[in-house]
Amino acid sequence: MGVAAFVLAALACLVAVAVWAQYRRLRRAEYIRAYVFPRGLFDRLSQRRPELARKDIALVARGLRHFFLAHLKSGRRFVSMPSQVADDLWHEFILYTKNYEAFCREAFGRFLHHSPAAVLAPERKESNAGLRRVWWHCCKEENIDARNPTRLPLLFALDAKLGIAGGFVYAADCAALKAGATGAVYCGGDFASASIDGGTDGFGDGAAAGGGDGGASDGGGCGGGGD
Image (cartoon, rainbow, N blue to C red; front, side, top):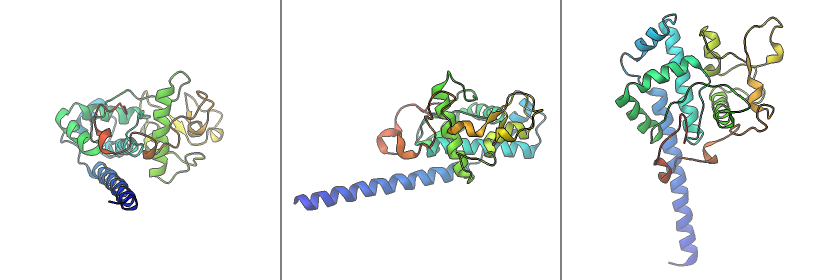
């Protein structure tokens, strides 16, 4: 085989690998969107959060799907959960060990470990990067400008919308908050700002930034979320 033929063959191979990776990523995203949660899972969340109606729990499940999609679309990098009630549902899902393991295998190619819900904090740079990734991909999922949001993505609005005790309250534009607001409110604009921890790690991350969906990266653990 001549040099030119070898180069063409190598390029064709690279293109084929890229196309296959993109196809697999799309297939996994569709699997997450269409996944039917285990029977009884919503009842368990009802026991934990009896104030939630069935339609509220369906909304929480949708938010959790968005979290899983953010993990997938970030190249399966570390992601942090921004909602306490979605975290509750995630935790209950994990207790269905066989179902959850099978879901992770189909959705991500490996296990996604759990970590508690969190908010941006100066001392938690890794967690901050994970939150920024989730914010970025949730905004993209809902056609929101991640840098200058006029509304919140569902996952970041859930706790306030449902009045979750101990939940995290976000606002798209903190400058627009009424002066009489009480309690801690976290700003959507902070995800694009370096003022929290001196950087913006995770903001704008895509699947090509690391982890990816290539064959060799399927091994090993998957943090909660991410490696």
